[in-house]
Image: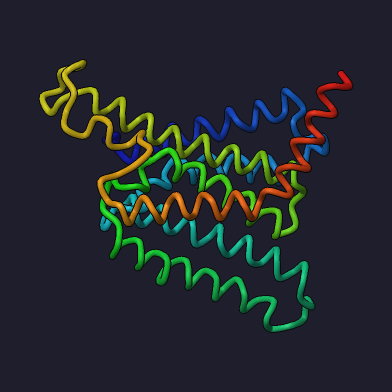
Length: 229
């Protein structure tokens, strides 16, 4: 697999490219600086997210550290929108969310996942994007802004998988085009674990259902705008 340094470097490059594309093609009509920051962050987090199935080391620490911070940010935005600003719950919600992300979600992943399992798969990349869309829309972001962030997340995730596959095309002696045993273990649709397959595809169906109404309205609006041009 590609090194963590490679993943984070390409993730940053993708984040910069995503921001440039958003600005150049006027994908964000409001030109909100915070949106550019969120798009870049989504691409970077996506580029390291598949390594959440690593039990130890820097990748899992940075991955779940990033997820914890993002969870706190989304929860804080949600709390500020729905709770009184002078209420203690407004600030307890993001703290509890961060603790759950780090200790509960992180602990479960370490216990029940194996490296290069279904976390390294195309459906997992789609789930990451759909979860991003659901979380950001419910945190108060506009649907189109949330879509851009979810797209950046999915692109970063897929970039990670592609880099792992490219690295797997080189064997342990560094000879290109003589693949090592890891080839095909990242950019895949299923794993050897039936349980993991059921969980990931189940999550995919659930997140599609949760986002279906907003996605339908968004794509209908895009189709209408395209037809008018």
